[in-house]
Length: 204
Image 1 (cartoon, rainbow, N blue to C red):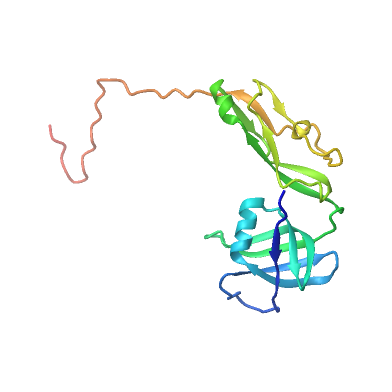
Image 2: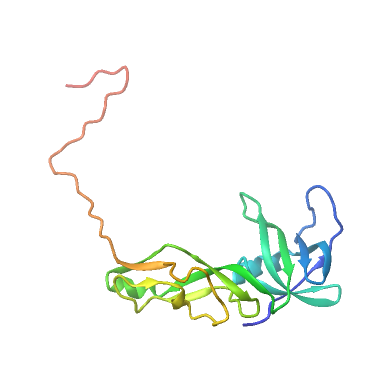
């Protein structure tokens, strides 16, 4: 996977609303950083980062002439526009063990529909523990060859053996038959009458 690099710029603490067009306020903390450090990022870079790599993206952060490995930990957005207004990045060691909620993506559902089957998803994230350099951004599961009643559990993820979970028997999805919904047509010959307006007499 291609290394993702973003640049953090110094951002003095300031009260009130952030008013620098094209930039997003953020915070760096973690390994090698004595205290939480306010920074700012190019807003388009952050938007593309989250869009392409998800809310738990792993990144290389360039800051003050050095490059540090980090993980997106929190994103704040405006309630109506969903515009990103703040991002927290935790600086970590690549071999540091962490527990993350990793998104699960299911592919091949169109093949199930050809067999009058569908995938009922009960959980879209998996709780995974392990070294950060082994941690995937997402888990992809191909369901195209599954049969009626088949269930998806952790063993179907095909992850590195050094990545573990406490939910080995948790069911993330199950294959069911497509439910056909019958819509009853109104009986012929039944005429509906429009109600008379208030203050008017019904015409006979």
